[in-house]
Image (cartoon, rainbow, N blue to C red):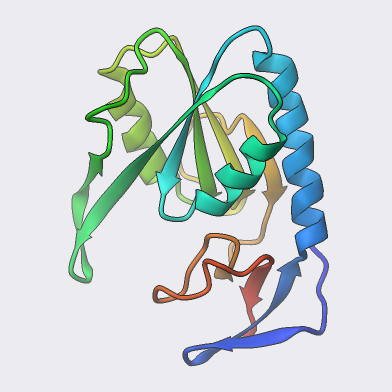
Length: 183
């Protein structure tokens, strides 16, 4: 489970402290990669990263995944300006072929699950063999859907997190640790 350290950073107008250090993240990413190696070793799965947040996680995960695989990315958008449209639009599937493939959606964080549910339904039109969900962080108490989250590195508090792909107002995605808002 997450441990707190004394390291505090300021991003824009907010202070954050380390929530998950790089070593803990690496250990859990290695664990999940090993599970995936075992479960998909006889196939060639398609890892589908959800941009922008998943880029660090999927990169580290697939460096540790030792079997053949394919990789693609999709972008989800539900906002126009600062307001949600209530509808999620996906871009990036134009050149990806996932028909009759084992697809593993790779997310940085799952909270309410609303976008994930919309993505799962959207992928159905491409006729994948299976769709599973892999996430670095899972906010179980915020989750409002019934889709199983198949591979989870960390269950985390329902608080604002930053780093390792997660941003605050466009900043912080490049940090090697996950930080929590210091309230």
